[in-house]
Image 1: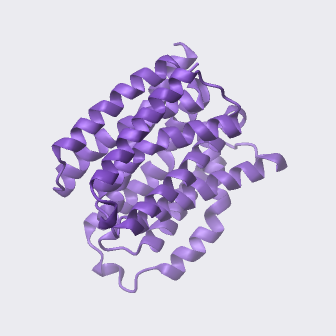
Image 2: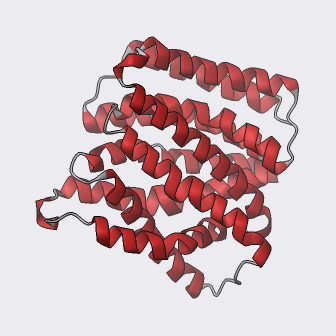
Length: 287
């Protein structure tokens, strides 16, 4: 299979897995503290990642790889999960999912700054159009509904875009699953200690749905999804494959409506269809 086509397939699988992250986080923060959720998911994923690295006897990253791995860890292991968990205390998952439509633009910008990519002008037109549609929808809902929640989501998008681009760049040398695994292992001592400190006073009071949600964001959102996502970005290009994130609101809204019984307005669906068309246009001008 062509390397670029393989990159788009891997990227699509990553987006599909990530689509369940915000609904699952919304379920978890109903019973678990956002800080505990953030550090617990990173600690669980870090233990699994460490076992995988030992099992396959992966070579340790070089000294020059430590700073990029730290950036990945700050962006996608700590920054995005923590900021979204805090945001979801103020907004619904359906509302927060709309902000994910800004991720392709953030990823593309960092892909240029950190990955040295240079998409054609038409790419930026479609990428900005898709992001503008998403941002316009969020503003149409009334920014005063929860300015704190919206600002936290915007911060999460910036952190995630940087983590995605830095991880994809590093994946070209270390491999996709190795990058996220080493980033998780690098974060493990701090995350495990904080998880013990922030642990709920009574674990028995936490319901099964919250634990299931924690398991999903720990194993799939924090580890498995990145195996496909970083591989896809490295193969197909950070800016190009990053546009697949515009599909994430579509999958996420469906999950929010089906699992959480949250309202999905007709306008949400219209915006989602429009940004999907922007993915098609951006892909055409990506290189």
